[in-house]
Image (cartoon, rainbow, N blue to C red; front, top):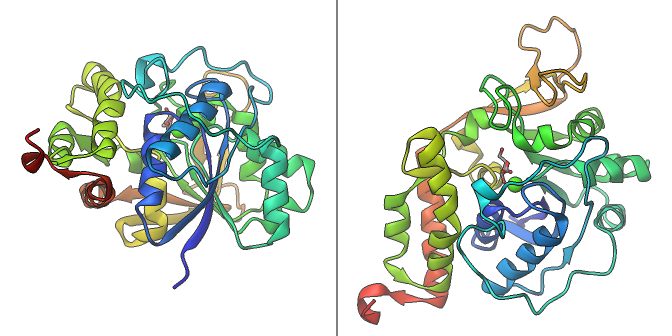
Length: 325
Ligand code: BDR
Ligand code: CA
């Protein structure tokens, strides 16, 4: 079968960076571009991080395109430093990238690529939905031509991670999420209900680092700050693999429990702003607009992630024992 052709729209971000590596390590996926958006960090840092991680993985041929610097209506979140580190990718300290982003704006790039090949490209938004909403508004034919969106975002039955009710990506630009959810594009949503079941542990990091490679070291260093955050606030030695889990919708859909539901987002401006909710009881009598991952076999996914990172690391590394390190 031909690989699924995807563009990742992203705000890297530790788990965003791991998503690029997982895409490159997955033969079922053809990563065609990264478009950037502000979220975990500014769009400048997000773009730099996207370029640096691709360089680390010898994948600079994949274009990076810079997108929006502000949400549609609200002010940007102050800083994701405590979660993702000052750079956005933990303690990884990657060199300044040699490659440059394309000169175009990400919104125009997305429109051009999608309209050039209707129904061929899927977009995986793993940051705030600002670029996608703007593409929908700018080009009326965009929504009809996107094959699918697989979005990391929302908290359906789960509590939130940026407010008690809301998940970060949706809360960061709730108005964009509202436009996207009602666009008619086929959507799969991977909310916190599923992603919090996918915990990468310090033992997993140790196992991966038995291979002495820049990729294994990057996964260790990038997740260090993220793990400190989870230890401090959630009390466990590990971190949730929010964004990488989106890719399992391509290569391991059997891991998920999906339900087709009518889903909306609160943009009323009150305490529940950015809260995503599903009409389980069908009280609104509206047709389902989103396929929601309500559950996942999380440990099975994390095992697959580690195996694929081991394979990617082995391409550029040697077993630590043979190297003396
Ligand atoms: C989402 O927020 C960001 O911090 C992560 O990169 C992920 O996309 C999880 O709520
Ligand atoms: Ca993200």
